Length: 313
Image 1 (cartoon, rainbow, N blue to C red):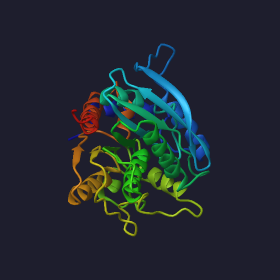
Image 2 (tube, one colour; image 1 turned 180 degrees about the vertical axis):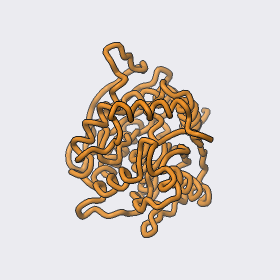
Image 3 (cartoon, helix red, strand yellow; image 1 turned 90 degrees about the vertical axis):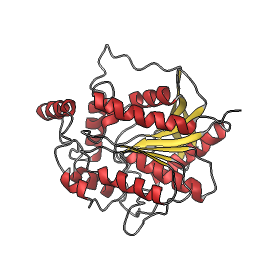
């Protein structure tokens, strides 16, 4: 189908305002630009989606305290989700994804713990996933009686997929679910969708290559936890947590999400696929503004809520 007309308006508005391209001259400048974009709709009259409670804290990480933010939903149904923000492992923080985490908490009925993991290029792989792993262990210890899941968007979905593999390989913690919104899973950037959607849909193929280069800089190299679809690093997903994989039609990463869902299913992992017809990469950032994004996100979150539902006594 054609690009969703509401997203066509969004992209035209961003282009005319000089907000595109996303990537600027360096990581620091691009971070500031990304944060400005993420908070642009939060004017003086902005009221965030209400949850029962929001608290900031830290967990002990491999290089010191890792900031986390915990969201208690208005209707707590007993699950807990570790949430990892997107931004190419280079951008994003607890502020940029605060609205998303509030929606995830309320729709799934799960406590959401968002992680402010270290960012590349200052902290390339494995720093982000090691911080995320430390947070996952801390959350599992803090909520031992709750079904536990991992979730994320874009680079955060990549980290979530890596955590699911690591949890399997290290004997736990047991995961009930993984939610992957348009994950990045192959640094080769050579899929048909990477070519077909290379420009014009917010995330570009060149930007994705830039993110990978910074994330895997220095002595960091790809491994199956980072690039499960890589030609030299492909991962066997057998035995990982049941997955919800959401893709967007006009996304350079579309095929990576589809291909990982195929690999999961072929390995016998229960998979719910949520297609995003007419949508672009990053659509969960537009909840409340684009109806089609709402529909896809709600379907994804409802599927995760079902996986996190505690068993009946």
